[in-house]
Length: 110
Length: 118
Image (tube, rainbow over all chains, first blue to last red):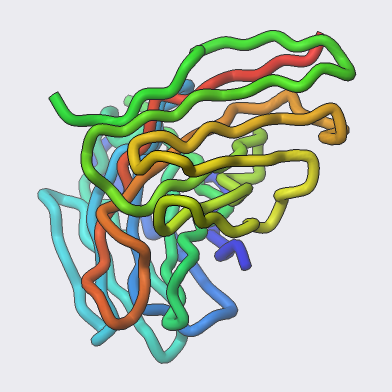
């Protein structure tokens, strides 16, 4: 039931772009994205609801393709502060559960 | 300030002992969740509760137990039946139970409890 994320890890230089993908085997109602720094709690980034919406937050944006049960997180012109592990969280159409993905470790270097 | 509090931050347990992790929220959230985090495996759902006096098993409930006697509290007990309990445990809450008939809402997390078996 846990959604699968890809890639597992990515290393970027400052200013480069990255895409993180999240794929579920279940029909989804919504997708959430979170970022976690080492040893800390995950911090909420954004929610995308079914309907194929896209959202943006500064230079971080995301899309949700409900037909493919997939979401992608786009990080443009990456900054050092973007480093961390990114998780997608999914709610199924049948509800009642909230599952997190396997995580993507993102490291931005100068 | 509203938030979700986990305690203790670090916990050591001897093999064969039960131990209880505390999770309290003052956000008036209906739904609460427990996750286990191991390196390279993301967050795996242990138990969740949509309402007081009701809770459901997640993917890895074996060796764990919970209770939800109050809306604010969702303690997790790691029993001696859990064979590999050393991990980082995260509690989360959201405004209501999820479902297609209602608006989705973000999850708020506690700071986590790192449990080590010695």
